[in-house]
Length: 173
Image (cartoon, rainbow, N blue to C red; front, side):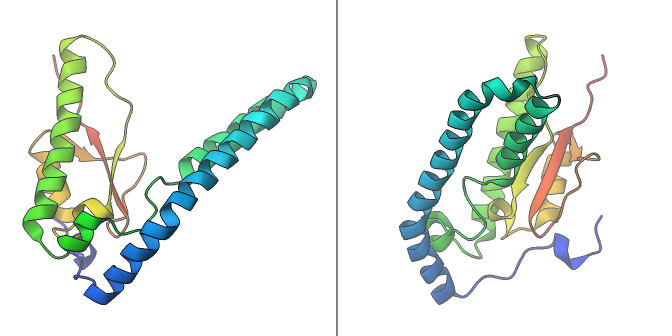
């Protein structure tokens, strides 16, 4: 399938480094979340005040574009943080395999429920960050996804060292 080593499992990180990152996560992640909420509230406050500026051509489109960029670039779980399960299961392939399988199974169930109800499926592509598959590699994500009729997204490319982006194959009636 993929002959590039970046699609394989990532090497386990040193335990001491993980412990330091976990402690920093416990200390800094709440501050990160507060900062995200404060910035979002500033956007809302500015949006209320800037309502009078919508008479300027393109202002509203530009402001909404800025909010979209903010939402796309800010992560709730940044790449620098380490959670307790990650600290405990670093290098455990079975743990990461179960994480990937659970995520893909949940997306598949939502897609099938939408199909059964004759509704639009959840918007995609669906991203799986490296924190979910680092012990098994991005190649395993692709294999597990193909087993459930998913494939790599073509409009938003994957970076196996950061994120795998999947989309559901179209259903033929």
